[in-house]
Amino acid sequence: MNKASVLAAALLLLFGVPTVGQTNLPKMTVVSVGDGDTLRFRNQQGQLVTIRLGCVDAPELKQNPWGQQSKTRLQQVLPVDQSVQVRQIERDKYKRLVAEVFVNNRSVNLAMVQEGQYESLSAVSQRMRSHQTTIAPS
Image 1 (spheres, one colour):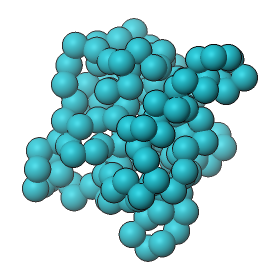
Image 2 (tube, helix red, strand yellow; image 1 turned 180 degrees about the horizontal axis):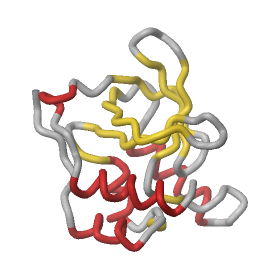
Image 3 (tube, helix red, strand yellow; image 1 turned 180 degrees about the vertical axis):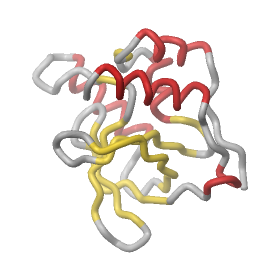
């Protein structure tokens, strides 16, 4: 992901967060966690979708012990069969959907940054620590 797309995604997370009532964000179900920032979901049509959490970067699994800790924490936050809402940001070079994931109207991306599980990808996303990114109930 280039710097411009990272900046745009961070700005969307901070200032352009739509409400569920405005956009009817698609619902998906967690199938598995690959690492600290990549998951597999099943969409409402039953298709498997790989999602990379946007605007954040988790340690790689080979970066012990942090990579495994980040994956384990994401598995706790997003267990298998957890229902989520997804706001697409873009597609990456691996054709994964890059997105913000919400549980109970709270941004998982933001929560993991606030917990210190992730590094932010830009100076703008550092502000995520002090802003609440939520979506209004429908």
